[in-house]
Length: 326
Image (cartoon, rainbow, N blue to C red; front, side):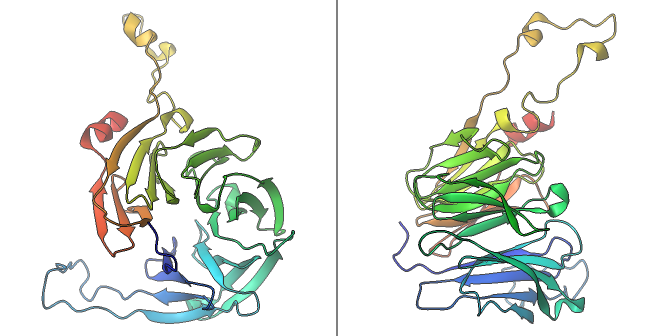
């Protein structure tokens, strides 16, 4: 279970740069949280890889490039890079403000390009956000309390709203990398939901596999049927959501592609489409899992991080890997 005053830090690398990353630090209400852009050091020897167990290896120091000055807007909940491009645009969510930043040359300064405020009754505050890789990167989704909202970055106006997306606080969001209108959300109601943002009255699919708050949901970057979730029930669950993926029937061969001499067997014609299922449940953690991420270099590799500092790296089961590929 999560501690009552748990502190979390979020780190996200710029997609257009190998050495820039943005960090937001979140903690309890007594501390004003902020965001900054840092540069990771280049390898001292190109192509060289030191073993983490090498006693001679030393920790490298990050270089602070600039702060995202949100002091006039409140505490930062999260930051998200523009998914494509040169890595010069960043969005930060601070209290009830959504802020679009332009990073100047060498990323030494961040200029506030535009902003919008969340209006409504009470003290509304953003909890999470995600920048869509589709629509020329003009769409952003945010979460506040139990609601999920869509925004157009060109006008900074709201495009859709799912008022009661979850029964309790929405913790995380992620866009399907291959289906432009599909969005996943998770929350404190122990559920993971999948939405078509064109029709938000009901979720397309709902998962109820976790027994406590779901902190994290991530689509696989290449194979969008693979969905990763992490929860404060100390478990990481890998699901195969093939029915709502970009290839719901796998790799199909049309009858027109068959030669006159070839005949499709009856059992192939009547074959049922694959069913959604839980592929594996990983229970190596002994504390709340706050983060789960896919590798950007290997689509079959993923990592999870729990409150006690344990980092676990796992692979997609080999049988499923070859089933997807073949």
